[in-house]
Image (cartoon, rainbow, N blue to C red; front, top):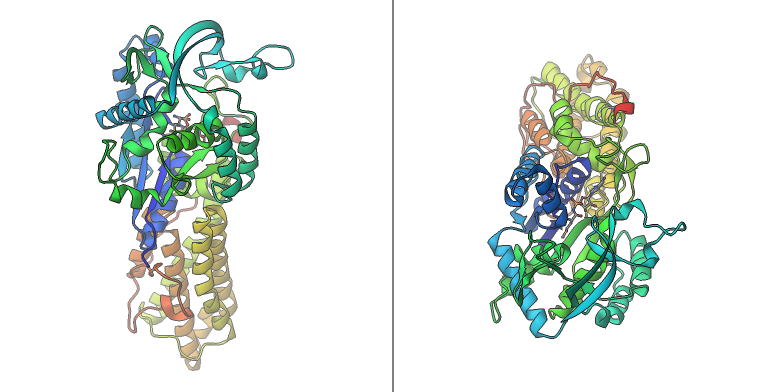
Length: 528
Ligand code: MSP
């Protein structure tokens, strides 16, 4: 049976500033998962983009004295340029000012409005400008003030439109309880459930134009624009393959893709937007329980335990890192040095030591010594493995299980531990070089078969490592396969035996050229 397509989305990034390493992590993580599933032969649709509306954008543009449209266009350009540098392979670009999206948001608003899910009410109270929402006494700290996360808090009285969130609270609790796979990692489900239990009011989905004009006008009241989160979440529908908001549209393609959807988001936007507003919006639109998207909630990159922020001045610029260390070293580090779901501390020295240990000394060294020995002793020519000795049998027995474990872990989104299997294979192969000592075998003509076995087995191990790493370091993996002069192995199905990665009889390997030069600088992490 053909597997479901894999429809993967990321959060759409706010365009009130430039991208930092946290934004880059999320896109690389999603890109690695998308590329891997493509390698597995699955149909993949990868959606990412930018969130261009909202009060923050309007304020930042006003500060600079420029039009919000001009302001977001410039910042959007920065995100697009970085995704190009980082090799992000999205299939579609979601921009919330795109007319496709604005039409979709308006159509959906009209629908929920005419279905009775929206009402108008007056609210007076405290309003957080930064979070663009009313805050209640619950949000006050022990000293009675609102914490710094709320930014400037002002008193406001306003008439607005509300979406009947509370009507769906019981449904949402039941849904969370009965869908163990709704959220990965699992521990976030309890966090969400607690938040839903405490849910105390409906969702305000409008902002008066007198206060915020930079948004999508409500289809049923031209004095208002749509609240930025209601607007932003709808991007997952607007840009989904085959989606058409028009009543009675043919949604066959859409439904096929939607059944395999996973939203990759950071932990800060699980509660309430993706864990409450979004499922409830979809439920109100008539989506069945099995059409509620799964959430992959990743942790945050911090700096020495603290949040990255402009005011602290500890923002790490991914453009600069890519220039200094190369795109693939940055991509590798971002998914290797953090366990998906957990937070981690970003330190440039760790990037350097990972790249040196695992890429330069590990895989690079293995490739270099294998190609050199093959060239010196056999003019690069390989022959099939015959009567392998114990060490060869042991290493070869790792091949199918390495691929199988890697794929299983990638299916569970555990990229960091999937990479453990590649690192394990590469170090086992390097140890195998040391124990079999091909330079000694080369001096003993009666050991010719064993020498061929060692070279063929090493080449197969590198081919497997490069194949598995294609999703993580696509550029470098291609260079390695090029030097081996071989195609990657197929990941469409689990390999049945150790021979799946062997080269054809008489295959001639290419010349060794350095792929991962050692990074000689020792960064001062105090600067990050
Ligand atoms: N625009 C909203 C998302 C709307 S989705 C319908 C938003 N934008 S954001 O620019 O603030 O954040 C975008 C993504 O980057 C979020 O998933 C967020 O968690 C992630 N990250 C922002 N800083 C991060 C780190 N320091 N580390 C890892 N990811 C972080 O929220």
